[in-house]
Image (cartoon, rainbow, N blue to C red; front, top):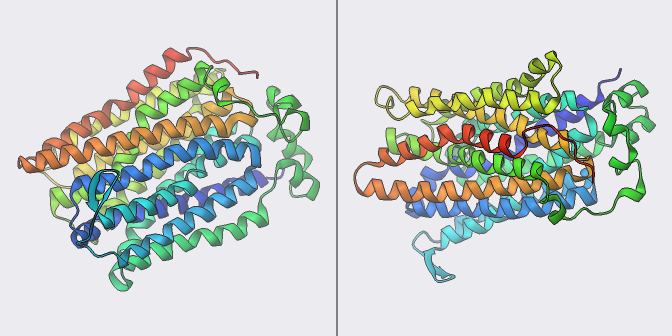
Length: 453
């Protein structure tokens, strides 16, 4: 059997790496930009919330767009837009730090509004990554390999988060913070060369001789996948649009959506607020954070791949894919409870909260590798990107709420001289979110059922 599907997985891995590189630059430069533009925690929360809110809106739309336009063109356009969005952050350099403005009745620094616009453009492009990637996995892998493939490409998020704190401070120090945005943003254009050179559908790659018939049959080995009515590439008459409202009528859609809503906010919080946490609690500079953040996100890589492999262990006793995945997700949901100890032990050494939060973030990536795959377990491939878009929108809205609440808590308790209390409250939510999410998902879909549209 040929192994071309793993080349496709590698392309998804590198795209996700670039995705998180671009996303992480702003949070890493937060200490520098806050000093330059004199932002409050709420100012920073407004900028990050603009990204997550627009990401939520665009993910819903882009998921639909990818289902209709196709994976190859849709993914390429998405990474083009987000690479441009990353680069234009550099132009905020020309905004005067003291300048103010009023927008929709709210007074804010011009720099805050300018970065909100830049983050919105970045969100428009980045919203296409996961719907397109999950759809690609559904097209290229049988169900028994999807969580592993998802875990592998999803680990690109961790690699991006590892490389960013090692790369961005160096660029900012020697060439200025503007070039950090430009240099990292330009990487996406290099990925496009490989995408157009190597990507095609399994049917196209079979015709070109890139894969043999054995691998093609393996990819389509699931019984429900052999029904051409579920495969838009096999049956032109089945390319009719499926409305969002009809998809919302299924409990399986709500299971995925609520699972994302209750847990994605945790990841967004740690992604955007960890540099601020290290600065506020330990007085770290951007350069000081390089090693702790690199260690933290290195841990998450093992969670992503290990979490993707875990359901295969449970499947050995004959369980169906969904039951095995839910059992794996329950196991994973226990690990974030260690985050409850992060703040109580923070006075001993900054490494203790970094390690404990790293375990929590690793669990999130393991959780993500499985919750994404529940969609392709139960829905036809032609609707996968749409369902992922709906759920990811809910998860991004959770990120908006989490960031806004965090910014308010930190400003409030900072004024009281006890910002640590704000972090304690946020860490409690982060610790219990996954058990809550698993419970809701199990109540909505207690048994595995394939959706037939």
